[in-house]
Length: 407
Image (cartoon, rainbow, N blue to C red; front, top):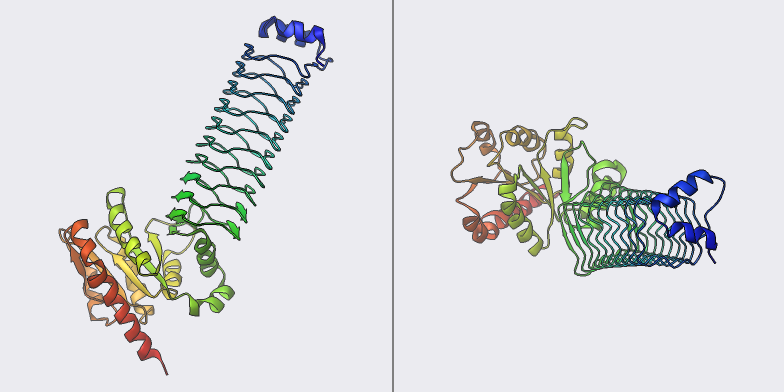
């Protein structure tokens, strides 16, 4: 039980408490099992205090200091801990359900088996925190930082993870079913036997991710970027394919073993500004429908790796290439090198009708593996012709070139 004297002083308010604490630095506040439900303790200094089993439900704890505090089994449900400091605090088994934890600092805190269901954790800092078997179902973790956090066996079902930092996090056996991950950073994260059924993964960074035994039934996956920051963005639409494609690109031995079975990949080249994303989406969806594996190379400047080398590897592993040369001047130069060296890979160029043809493209027309440019007016014009005018001719050419190459 809490020491009556400590509890009496705290109930006089944060100002009185902080002055007493400052005058008695050698005393460890004992507030075990204290009833502080609904208390106004905003900005109070409770660092290092023993609040194990305390009731702080619906309390105002904004900007309070709980660094190194013992809050194990404490009840903080519906409490307001906005911008509070809980670094290295012991929150094992604590109840933080439906609490406001916006911008709170939980760095290196122990939240093993804590209940944070339905809590507002947006922009909270959980770097290096222990969240094993914690309940985060339905929580808002938008833009939260969980880099290096241990989330093994955690429940994140239905959680909002938009812009969340999960780099180097351990999500093994975690439940992310129905979770919404958009622009999330999963670089170097570990996902072993992770449940992602019905989850939404859009525009996530997945370089270095480790995936084994994933559950992906009915998951929506799109534009998963497999390259690190500073490299040209290469995107795929499946987590397991992401790891596979990365190995093919960066591990020559793996490439030599696997490339004979990698011929369902289709490389899509282009510069897809926001207004042209609908064209990219249409191409990808039609390829998916026909059981191909689209690999997108969205052209950007690269300072760290030769662009042509990357594209050449991707091209070599592809069934055929679809190159949208509508926008931008850089693609024909890159294509020239590929066309010269990849004569067994068909190239199907696309060009929007109101865009002039690049003068250099005339060089490609004499190459039998480069198909006639397919021109389209707009997306509505492109959609019905994608199969007949783009994909089927490229597949036919691929079969023709393959037959020629057979002994």
